[in-house]
Length: 192
Image (cartoon, rainbow, N blue to C red; front, side):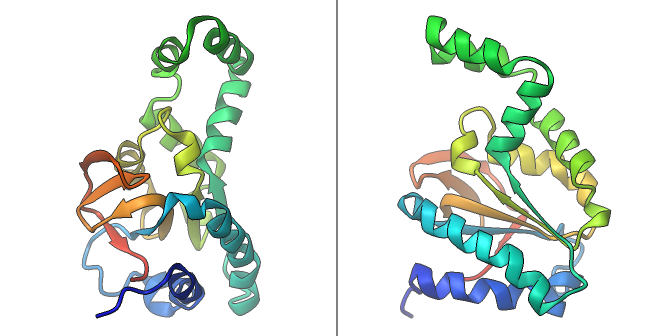
């Protein structure tokens, strides 16, 4: 069976995420409705552009839907800014290096805290779906599998789509196609 090109896969997303099956979580059993759309990291700009298109196209196709597009990197920066840590972090990185700043930010940007912040800003019950972007930019400040594990108790039946610059084979996430994360079995491939 031939592998679909990125354009073919991108063109399947709108139909998929506006379908009744997707929105109602049909065929998932009791699993959390988490989906991953993986793509080659070098195609980041094209995928970002497509997510912007989706943001408007979803509500044109299904006017009653409410969609949150969340850039994880921007969320992290806003969290740091809100705690007056952004400037301090930038200064620390310039003077002490990456390792020092990553160590200092481990607690303020703990995946559990990020998950709580995300659901406070975008309560899943208020949205038809959440689209997560900015995963590559957020690394190594935030590991995707940790965030998804921490989001599970809060999401209910609201679908979450992770746009992932790397590979997801249904069992493990590989950021940028090379960095292995711990196995993550709870997401479904959005489109093949």
